[in-house]
Length: 175
Image 1 (tube, rainbow, N blue to C red):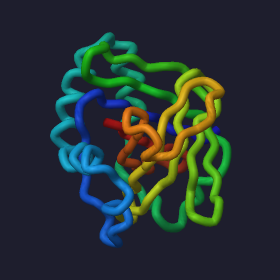
Image 2: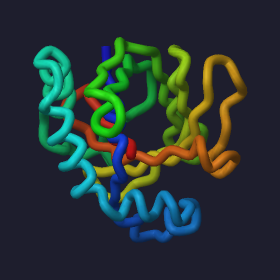
Image 3: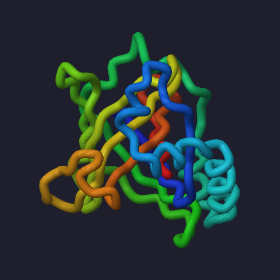
């Protein structure tokens, strides 16, 4: 089964907007700022997380294994996936959750992710930043509440840096 790992860093993350300017138009200033400090925030969150319970650290380490591979072309993200949330950094200790169901579809406007099980859900769209990196833009909702769109409720807006780390492994790193 293909796997997606969601690594949620409780600190701010960053990245530059895509060259086509679409992200510049879509993202709020808050999320642009979060994406502007990705490497620093990721480093701080991982430093904190890697001091956690050894079994949890092993789960995190396995999720992070692999170098970024081409994802923007020549790879089909559509289909059913197993996904896992791993919370890293911030007010809680390193917290890996069990596996959930996710689905990626292509609605003609590009890839669309839906986390379809568990109480905390997310839906959203992927934007190409480079051949090996995408940006996820979406929104969270709980249980079977109707999915939100990015921008409907700023408290629920979500962005992530996305990399492919294996034949059937994709990593989304959320701030």
